[in-house]
Length: 512
Image (cartoon, rainbow, N blue to C red; front, top):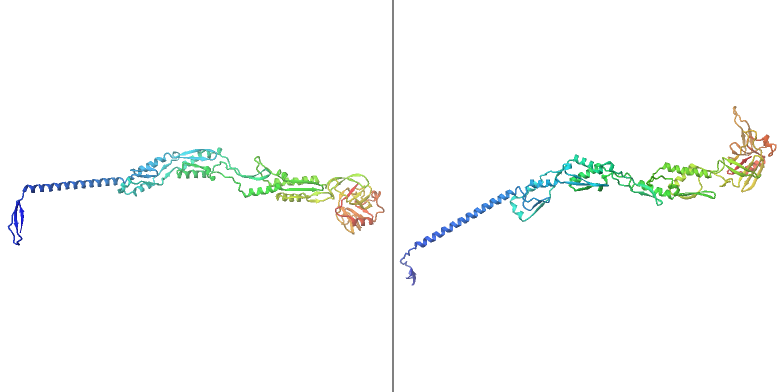
């Protein structure tokens, strides 16, 4: 059994299963009222708090939504487009600012030999044209992410489309100083010049003659790229170029040819005398302008060669000249020779000399002759010749200065011009044994005379040496009355001896 204290009184309780007597304890109503009042107050406060929170959330959502709406038409904070701070700006405002920059566009044009000039945007109606790319960029922006603008930056580069008047640009280009004819200098071709003993290529010069079409394309392209300047000199195609440049294979071949030409050295021998043609003389045959530019002229050059060979012939040919001759009898006579002597074949010599000059040949040689004599010098007769003294009616054959044959003769009838033996210097034309001498053909087809001979040695057309057994005697004055038709008559035995000795290149000197 235990006791329980109720309301200050001890009540004994027992452990019996039987219920005891129930006792009611009275409730204090004042306590009850305070508890109810406190709970209501708490609930009210809670409601107010909830309402405030909801209100704040609603207002915040409204503000966020409003700002998000704002940024559906404006770029976020921290946005830069083409270097322009585009924060809180519309696409139109950004494009207007870009367009404003175009109003002050200026391009500087540099050209050869001219001071730089400028073309302004206003001169060519230069202006910005929207491509819609900036608006499209704005549309890709998610408005509700505007808070990110406070924490990150965005940099964009877009193409700035511009337009300008092509016609006005053409006009502005045509007004540039570099486009004026009086300010342009034509380019000069590379050329061959002679200096320091050799031929070299002088490079071409650029000049400043403008290629208007290419210059316009360069300036137009620079404006399309919004360049601040353009240098026409940086593009060779903007100017007229030289037709012949230093790389020309034709010029290089010319240099090689003329350098070979200048190296040519041809030494002509005329017996003991020599004449040398070298590059210093050959160079003087070329034509150069006031700048030293070689003016190739094959015709003029060849004429110099022709003239040179002609002068060689004039100085050294003896055919057609008169020689002083010391006769066996001791007389001094002057004999003209048109069929004997030195004679340069000028056509063949010119051809050979041209080839040697062009190939730079260095050689020593004789000229090309069409006729040759026995010796050079004043007396080109040498010491081997046949002397026919038409006054003394006698002849001698000298070989190396020694007489190897001599004979009395009968020459042409001096009183008849058609039969008189002409003086001169000749050489043997032919030899025949036997032969028939014939005069002129008559109208009836016969000859004025026909005379068989055993030995025939012509040296001047129809005039020659031959045997004449019909002559009663030789030498003396026989020719005055019984002279021949111009031939040199010999005793038969002497004619045979001469026939065996005579050579084709031996000069035959006939004189009175």
